Length: 459
Image (cartoon, rainbow, N blue to C red; front, side):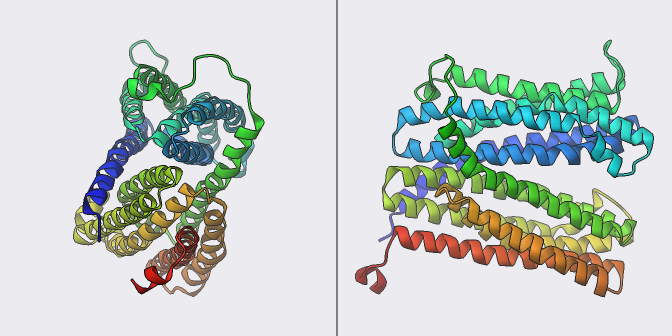
């Protein structure tokens, strides 16, 4: 007999974690939109410089985010098991690791000059990109600290501080951009470099705000260690890296795949690239709720695993999977119902609109398939299985999707429009492979946790 009240409670708990994540991600995406709009109104060269620089520091950020997400996995299981002291003990080690990672990615971003040289940019664009990156580099260590704090409270299941800090950082970025890009209110006029400094300052605001919120929150006080210096524990830090490194590499290489795909489509002409960019941007926006539900699901499944109650694990997995797939279906329905309205926001060029509509239909199919993969992958992360999804990603995207994209999109396609669509179809083929393999792994994991009995088999 189905325990419907238990499922309703699980849905409520899931969305309590998911909605602040959606708000925070919208705020973070909004920061990029504001940067683009304000820089675009200042100078086209500065806009190009920021776009280039953003695509260099974003993979570094996502890599460190992936590593820090392991903290939420560890904390979720310890929280579910009511191991309060272990929840407290992991936070100082996460902060030590964040300092170490920040000391790596910050200088890597600051010294990006040789990479920019490889891009063969115009001298002015190259110099502005480097100025932007060197300013952002001072803020990257703060983002790792922010993610360490965010992932700690995410493991507990309290996400409001993350949302508040992200929204305040987004709001602060607007006047900072206005002052430092345009030279207003007595600030120097720095263009793209000013945008970088505004981003860096906003990055530092986030860990300060979330830290203050955590200290003031009575509900979190039980799960925070005393305010004193704690020695680094290499074993605890190694556990975070062991679980988080595959997640970080997954994020890093996923961005790499879409960057390579973008370069392939760029060879097919400006119309093809414009249509691809529109479809990709639309897909990116509707993809956010999917990831938010998946991330919340990982926390709830982690709590259930830590509790040792098999029925709770079943309910968390089934509820999270159902909600993730429903969000994917809703996103697909949205894309298929109003593609023209979405495309009209970007362009009124009929040729671009036609191809973009074709690509958005493919994006809708991609999302509904990927929703199953997202649910299964986040469940595996809750079980501390992070290496397998990474290996599957390497296989499905880099060894299947990219070669198929090149062969069908660039070698066999007759027109640029067909080539662009074929590249998207190759991405769908890759996500199909990933979905099948990761779902199989989850089912295998669940079968080990819940071995079949004669009675259950009959049922």
